Length: 235
Image 1 (cartoon, rainbow, N blue to C red):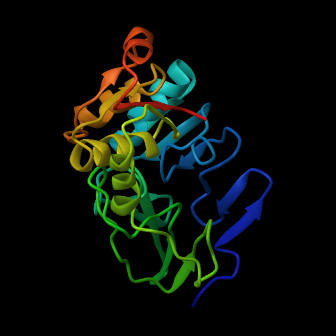
Image 2 (image 1 turned 60 degrees about the vertical axis):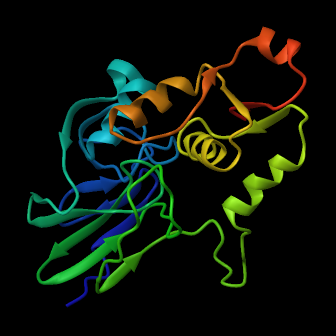
């Protein structure tokens, strides 16, 4: 039987009553299941954080010693329990280490997707389709008529100009994807990256992701070269 109160909405975030844990809480809690490391889903200060290894690395970089008291790292498809609720992570395809959270209780499956992306992305694990009885999801673009242009087609437009270009991109996720797309589809461009993005790029590489060719931003290079420079900065 599907339980209407299995997940409740609280000021702290989504709360699993039967497991006594929160999904992506917005305040520090005792037990937090974190889907991915973007700041609107992963905050510091909780006692126990259950997440993937990549998410832990990103959180430790961002929050340092305040990331969490204890991390409990789980692999995709590895089932674990918090109280009587069985939990399994599946790739969400959003950023490196992002996870959908499948919760099983009394033979009913509840799936929390977190942020997800179904289109191919060479910088993270591919999205996995998961069967469930109840779907708990969110969508930035909920209108099914919303269509986005091909990322490859868009990035290749940069080949139409030799002028220097500045691109704004979030430090985690978007930047790494843009670096990879530029490296593959705009080989004549010299990609330079803002210093605040570099640690996240290194974490991607530590987890075996091939991001491509890039350098730390050098003001002299940008100033003295007026063509084919692409500078990626956070918003």
